[in-house]
Image 1 (cartoon, helix red, strand yellow):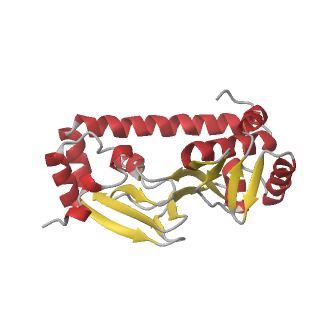
Image 2 (spheres, helix red, strand yellow):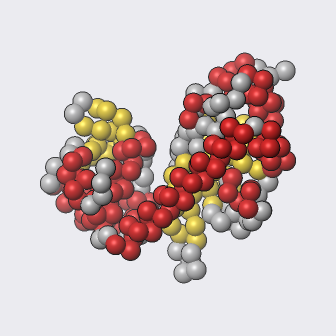
Image 3 (cartoon, helix red, strand yellow):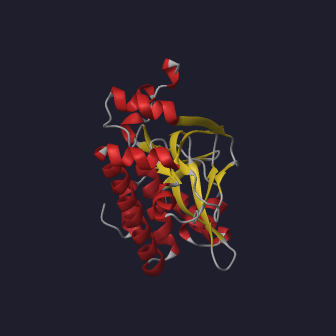
Length: 235
């Protein structure tokens, strides 16, 4: 018997996830086949190079997806939040994981085994469509990131990162936006492909110019329009 509080139809992230169009009967099946886990900050969901056994759906929390390059350096390639799925690309490509998934904060994640996911995709067109849509968005983000790295300087890339974080994690706080995500300077530097010292220098400049503020480890965006100008992207 599935407890009501554990049912997928009661999930706070249902509207953002790939199962959002399923009826109650479909959600019954999804609920029966899920394994819910809580990962503490720093715990790993899966490792780069390991074979995929299923797909993960983030119910709450933030997961960072990192890759180790040929030079041995780690870079953050994606941040997954509530409603996002991870591990699906390797699952359908029949390849080992190309990245490592680690909890940036305490995260509640549901796991669905490979056979169930493959069966569900064949039976539920809406789920298949949403997975394909997610893959397309991820590919687009990866292409944009590659373009950003090749054509933009560090100042522009930092401004773009702050805007992306605002879109995904920004919450209105009076006339400013609070970023409900706490990344270390090393993690932010990894995302935009620069040294921590360089990022800190530009971060200090952004604060001095009134673009952002900081209270403890929390970042607030003050002047979004100016950030857009600095990022050199159409928003």
